[in-house]
Length: 81
Image 1 (cartoon, helix red, strand yellow):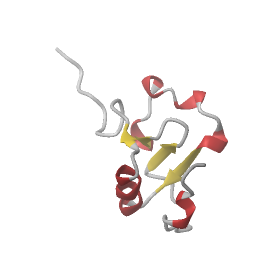
Image 2: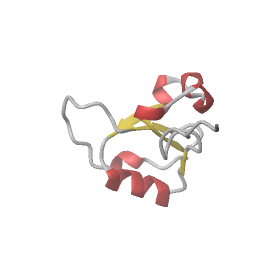
Image 3: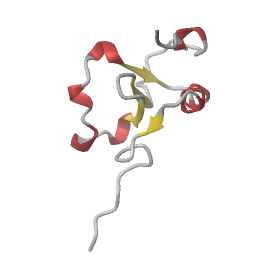
Image 4: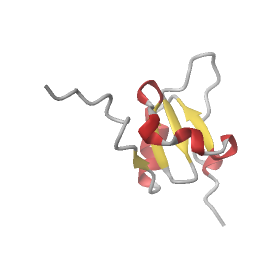
């Protein structure tokens, strides 16, 4: 039985786009502005991912074992010259 994170996370309504995309299938946190092909997010069914705007909720997920995506969480990597 999985953790029901809905009991612990505060959802705030609004029109703003989510700052983070949460992949619940692989327990990975993506930065929505920097998601790219390497993240494989399109392979994750819509019912296994959610959006999030609040940093405090992201910290809770990290505490629960979710990982930051190595490709997009810290922003785009700089090209090598």
